[in-house]
Length: 475
Image (cartoon, rainbow, N blue to C red; front, side, top):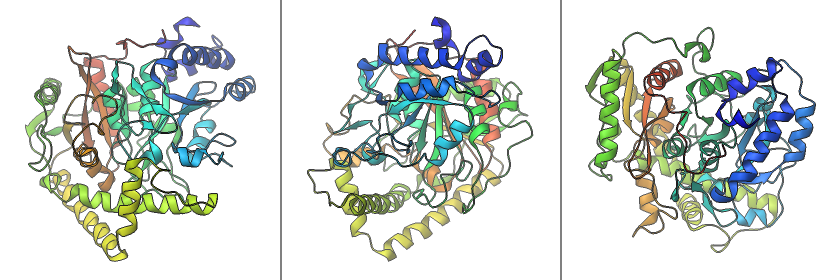
């Protein structure tokens, strides 16, 4: 089983189907890799090994990922497991989940076996996976760097070879940014592609379930396995193509028209040269693959209100979440109970009036229309940075003069597409001489995950990345 660290989720499932490995062997190997590696990165905050081994012994063949080990983000309920949401305040009450979340049920239905939970910032509200309750999650590529957030634990675990794939979510860049920081594939699906579950707040469509993986085929096959709406859902994207997303891997699309954006708006921190070079180098690669590449982007993406309106809605849901927890736990938190960023957004949410919120949501509706015109005007994909710089040091942004504003500004290229509900993927671009992974982002029109998967697979074939290993690796 020592070679399993090099086998992706699709490959591990195939080993089980061919009888070359048992689910128990796969799970036990993942447990050993976690125990050998996690002390250095602090990605796994809850272990459920005995339950996972029991589930492995009872695996029924037939599911697409039968017997494959998986880690899930601590923001998603897993029945009987801790449900502290990355919060020391919640953890003090010993809160546990009563049932699995919709995405965790779908992962189980696909055959995955959950071996543990990964770290997240408190309530997923900042772009680093650090909290009072679980400490600092570090980047396997360089331990002095952050693995990003809020799915930083998931990304660190996959990058370090603990499991082939891990579940997360993207509410403003929370899959794409950690994937970029850890040299992984992170696809944010269209709003509604994967149901969050009936009655589950999705922050007005901003937050969607997703996964991080080392290969495009894993991302495609897992999305195929867990996609679909549920009764009560609103948005329903177009159906996936026949054969699903996995059927597109290895099938080159027709030449596409790709716009390139390599600079930030004037009001935001500018893109540093090494990131700009990575974007332009990727543009050259796409041109060489036969696509029509030109400098262009939606003008709406430069609007200085993109992030303020996004955070107006986000902060109200932060206040809503804390109010619901206070009612459930029978205690109101004070400023000493919550992380500083949480306290800031909760208070901001409490101060926003119903009229302010309605105005923000109306503005976001107009943004969706403005943004869509660029795609309906003839473009298929937008290529851009994920983040304006390489991965930041751990404890960023609190070492910045205005850490809260810095934590907002970094979402320039990601959060607008949570507002619009469009699918976007981060793919590995390069690793700097200083050992810093850099990813780039591709964005498609609503419902067009098929284009993202096809082109990401083209890029992966031209410049493979899964064989590259960070210094902290389980193999």
